[in-house]
Image (tube, rainbow, N blue to C red; front, side):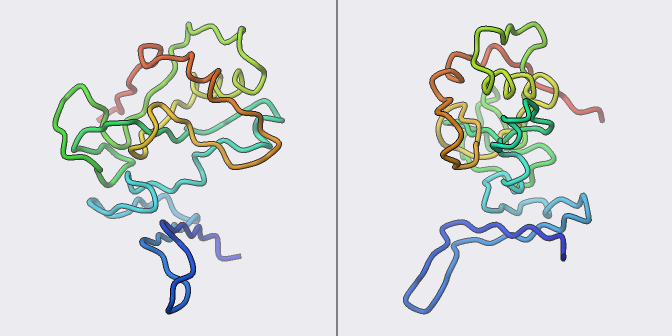
Length: 169
């Protein structure tokens, strides 16, 4: 086992064979980040798979890692662990790629389904990383027919329910 993660963006069959618009290799034996300024299949330069919610986590009732989130608009900036930005906007009120947002500890999760409670509890402890531009406040979940549609419930959680986690210097 080589303990490497391979991720691709716009991967598919082309006239000359298989092709990808972008490919990234992450060494899972290391905590090294991609070089500053480098993107990946994820706009922020982060690996995607380690930050998505998986069926086994929902079934177990615990998501024990930071989650990946997309926002509609981001700032032309990034903060580690991100290594790349994906915007021309400079508005200081917009999140940077790599921004870690954590669900406030006092947010009541009891009125949500067990699956969404699992996600929200993980967001209280590990938070989520702004990873790409896309659907507003969309947490990435693996495509799995065993996972129920969670969007309607998750949309009840607002941006004001989160706090920005500032890493120590």
